Image (cartoon, rainbow, N blue to C red; front, side, top):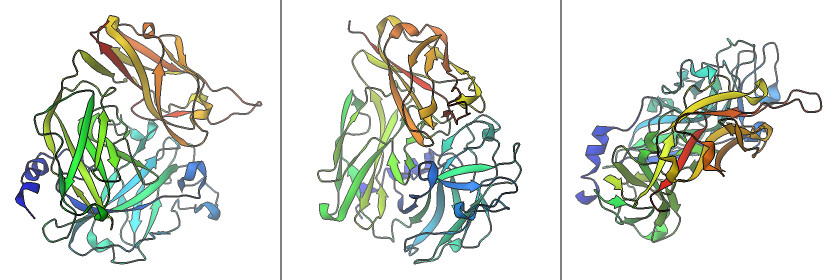
Amino acid sequence: MDSKWLVPVMVWVLVGFSVAGFSRPMPGDVFREYKWWNEVGDAGGAFRVGGKEGENLPDRGWAHDYINSSVTLPYELDLERAIRAEVVVEKILCHDGTRGLAVEINGNPWQPIPEAEAIAYPPWEYQHHVCPVVPVPLSFLKSGRGNQFRMRVAPEHPWKWPQNLVYGVHVRVYYDPVKKTHPAGRIVSIESGAKLGRSVRLQVETQVHAAEIRQVDFIGHYEDVNYEGDGLYTQWHHHFFHGQLLHHLGSAVQAPWQVVWDTSWVPDQRQPMAIAARIVDADGMIFMTPAVTDLTFDRGGFSVELCKPYDVPKRWVTRSGEMSEHFDVTGDLKKAVAAQLVWSSWSPGYMRGVSINGTKVFECEGPRYQYYFHRVAVGAMDVFKPGVNTLTTGKTPLIDGKMVHGMEVNWPGIMVLIQYSDKP
């Protein structure tokens, strides 16, 4: 392979940009993602891990020891020239107090799945939807078909019903980039050190014929709302739901492999940004390109403030009553032109309004008993005030005299974005 495709990679490998247990592929990595998700389960296609004390429900795969039945991956795993492997889990806390999630691969020793370090302690007391990563020895896997996994949670639970919801389990296998044939390419539309405006064209040049490429996914390392739910605002932003890549910069499915990144709601940056691309070939092999680095914004008097929530309540489920968080506004509200509320939830169809400083700004959206990601416009800027602000969710009432689930607000809470403009 021509050295121009690899030289910038080593710097990024050394720098890192990952957190233990929640790592992401880095520029220069070559890998496959064998993605399994549950299409037939309830709760929006969830795989329930856990069970109610004293109850055995074999149709849901529960057992008295809180271990699920085995799942066989419907893939032929390619381990030729493999150098390491990991398992990615799409996990929702579900029942607060649940801990000890672990995975077993092909009958090998159980591997504990890490908690997100940036969620307040103890993380099992705060609703969350995350994609933790656990390294697994290559010896746990076998080439070809027949690879199986099981999952479990700890039986200890404050109300004797430990349960996590799992929306997907992916086996990611990394390969030696020198010895393994793989697609290659680089970003050609922008160069390191560029200043970016509100609309950024991203394009990749590949070394192979277009017919050999399935798609190109653009990924950015920058500060933004915490889509991933792990409490980290600065990272390579993307995550998964039902095996689908979400909240990245965009995907191209045909040549010339380009997308336009709209930065209108991306926060002002404290540190330079970076952008790379995942080139996926027709056989599912993925190469993450060298990163374009030291990128900054020049948006001509336009800016975006990310107001990060704090004092986030434990067990934020709206059936339990009104709950509040705080966030700070530091920008000049006389120049504010628009705002958004951004958060992830479960079962938002039962929500009963969101208020800011005592004024209701939104009522309800989304399904019941399913995951949902919200990006809601705030109509009036006068609900905000300089300094400390309070955001409150309303209590879900009894329906037909019965308690219903309510909305779960996932970590890090409800984030606020405010746009400012120097132009009148």
